[in-house]
Length: 76
Image (cartoon, rainbow, N blue to C red; front, side, top):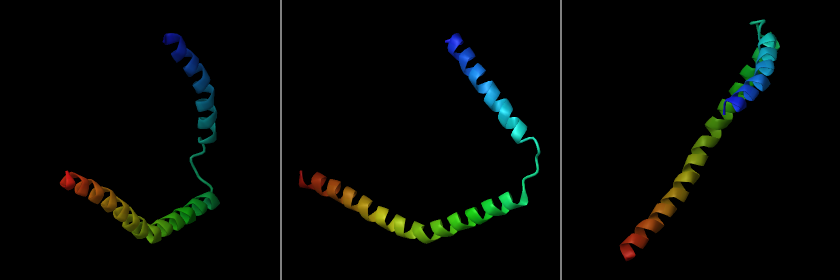
């Protein structure tokens, strides 16, 4: 068990140290920030348009499933 932990730490430490160097600047490029902001806005708009339809379809399937169970229980 301890040997596995040591091997895992030996494998993870170089990757973490490499990533922290890349994130050390602290200031994101404006184009990256605006790109992610635009992506977020697109995702939120898409979810806002699709969510009511998805919830309606899910409600139909769930009501069908539970209605079948209810009728089976009542029929017994």
